[in-house]
Length: 473
Image (tube, rainbow, N blue to C red; front, side, top):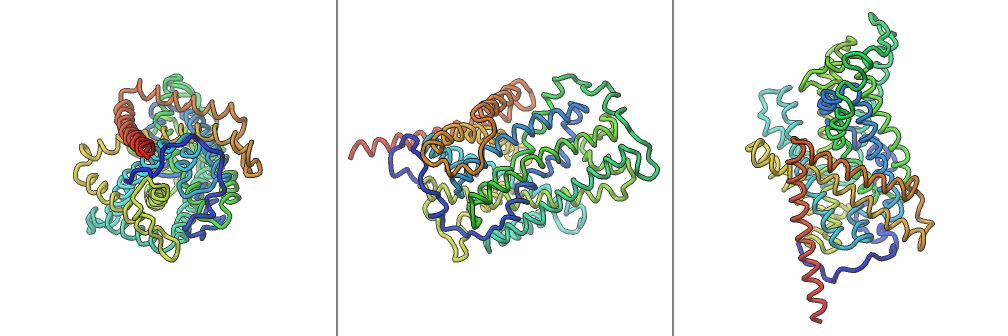
C-alpha cells in the first residue's frame, strides 16, 4: 500500500461522473446487471444455511427473513441511489471517501476486499466437496484448482465473460426458486398427485407460529442476515456497463422486491408444507420439502443448484475483489502497479492479486479449517455490517450534496429519506448488539471488530503522515 499523496480533505460536493475516467471495459449489458441484481444474493446461504434459522425460530423464520430482508433491501436502495448518481468500480468505497473522508474509503475498501477473498475460499472448498462426491476419483484439492484456474481465466479474458457466467448462473438459481415456490403452493393446496391440502396446520402446530417466542425470531435474524451479502457487487459491476447510471437504477429497481419475495416466499412454503421440527440438521430444507412432495432425486437436484450457487458466488467475489482493489489503486490506496489494464479493459494484475490471496485462503481452509482459517474467517465474518453502516452514513451525506449541486443525477432515490436511512442504521446497530449478547456470534463480532480497528488504525496513520508531510512543505 502506498501513502496518500495529499492530506485528508473534508467531504466535497460531488464531482463529474467517475465513469468518464474509468479505463475499464464497458461490455456489461443491462440483462447482465438485472440478473446479477436478482441472483447476486441467492446463494448457498439460502439453499442450505436457512435450516439453521428454522431450527431456532420455527415458523417465525418467516419474520426473521422479513426483518433481515427489509434491512438488505434498504441498503440496496441506498447503494443504488449513490451508484446511479456516482458510478465507480469502487462503488461504496468511493462513496465513503467522497462523503466522509479518505480514511473511510480506504478502510471499507480494504475490508471488503479481504472479506471477498476469504469467503472465496469457503465457496471453492464447498463446491469442490460436492464435485468430489460426484467424481470421487478426483481429489478435492484438484477440483479447487480447476475452479480457481477456470474462473481466473474467465475474469482475465474479458468482463463480458463474467457477465455471461453470472447471467446463466443467476438465471438457474431464479428458475429453481420459482419452480420450488410453484410446487410448494400446489402441495399446500393439495393439487399435486397423492397430496391433501395442508392448510395452516404446520404454522400453528408444534408450539405455534413462534415456538421459541420472539427470542427465536431474533436468533433467526442473526442466522440469516449475512445470507444477503453479495448485493453490493451489482453496483461495482455497473461501472462497466455502457450507461452506468441508468443500468444500476434499473437493476436495483427490478431486484429489490423480487429478492425479498424469493427469500420470504421460500421460507413460508417450507414451514407451511412441513412441520418445522421435520427439518434435519445439515440437510437443506428445500431437499426435505421436495422429498416430502415426491420429487424424484430431490437431493441431487438441490446439490446441482447449490453447486451452481457456489460457483456463481466464487466468480462474483473474484470479480468484485479485483475491481475493488483496482479502485483503491486508482485513488493511491493500493500499489499503483495494480492499475495495469489489458487492451480489453480488464485489470489483470488486480485479478491476479485477488486470486493469489484467494489461493492462500483455500490452502489454509484445506490444511487448517478449524484453526488458522477459522480465525481468518471470523476476522471478516461481521465486516458486512461495517460496510452496510458506511453505506448508510455515506448516503446520508451525499444525498444532501446531490440535492444542492446536481439534483438531476438522483435518478434513483432512497425511500423515506432520511428516516428510513436512520432506521437502517439503527437496525444494523441492533444486530451488532444482538451478536454481542449471543455466545456463538460474539467471537466472530469481536474478531471482525479487531480486524476493522487494525485497518482503520493503518488508515489513520496514513492520514497523519500525509498531514505531517503537507505541513512540512
